[in-house]
Image (cartoon, rainbow, N blue to C red; front, side, top):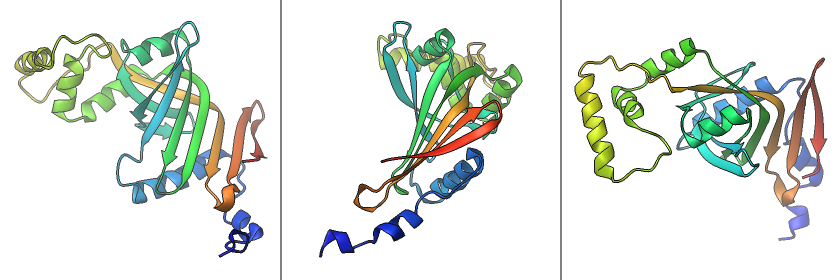
Length: 210
């Protein structure tokens, strides 16, 4: 079969990303589809930060909150990513939903969420997750797995009930988007890319060549 006749170019483009005046409605629609179709962690996103001397640093984290203010995740603020964000409060996020053949990239400034938000989310976690967070010196050298298990046992003894307080160095960050790019896989590498950029007047949009 000739590749040039499999999908007409016009039809391929019509199946791409629809026009929109702001990015949040489109993100919610894509996220809902990801929740329905991705087999694992549809809220997983790559978080990219930089070191003090400009080296990039990336890892996967989980999106735990989203609205028009920004995209929220939680971590130990004394971890490597926490330190990098406090030193240089700018970050990029990348969602990749393989089952949907879609990608969303977010760039913007970063700010800590309020203590009340961090408290509420920490309280919503399972007791085991709270015990682990309270026991871990995230990103610091660990002598052995047994050492971590000992610290967990000590924390469990200290807090035998359901109440486990949030460590003061554990909290959330919110990425305040200044640019959001939606990418849709299309036949014959005719991928569709729609970019939203924030201005003082609101959002502007443009399409990019794939």
